[in-house]
Image 1 (tube, protein in one colour):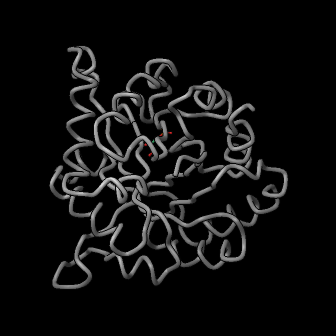
Image 2: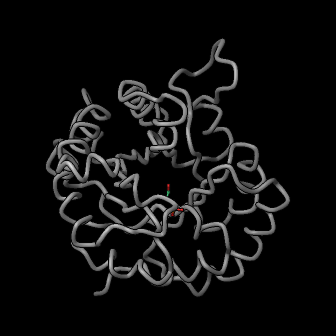
Length: 249
Ligand code: 13P
């Protein structure tokens, strides 16, 4: 179902103490934030329990940054969907470009993980995006449509509608060079048209989203919110960003 979502991807930042300090400060600001925005915090695995305990009775949802597709087994270093469910996790980021480029994650792996997340009642946030070279070569749409179709292959439209997509141009991640909102909006239109069921699914923009630029994305018809890295690490910045992210009536 399309809805406004702001998800903070903490990446490999914050130990349990730092995570707890963030949540305590952030929850102080929660009452002032727009009720229509779904807020998701995605700490590293090691802080999921601490954050989950603190947000349990609030409207803040818990997200993970990755998972394996199997329920259990000899997969040293991996975390399974039931383990995330056990920790109170609702969302899981899958196929982030850092996983794809730095850890060899493939389209097929993302497809297996997406199906496994849905089978366990987790909402996958499936990330797609093009490199600067692909963009310069005019390949953006072809690239993200191919990634989207590969990740969602074989899923019925009803299941696809439960997914959250995230369009994160790789050249915009952590660079301060955010994608022009109109350009992102057009790419998202292509993503939405790529697979049956995505018309009903939220699509988030990610890549140097800040409190100052989020409103321009929220105003675009195809953009349902943001997947935020750096600006989600500070409770004041993250709260300010959410305050500016609700869709103007
Ligand atoms: P930044 O907001 O730091 O550019 O990171 C974006 C991102 O990768 C979120 O998943």
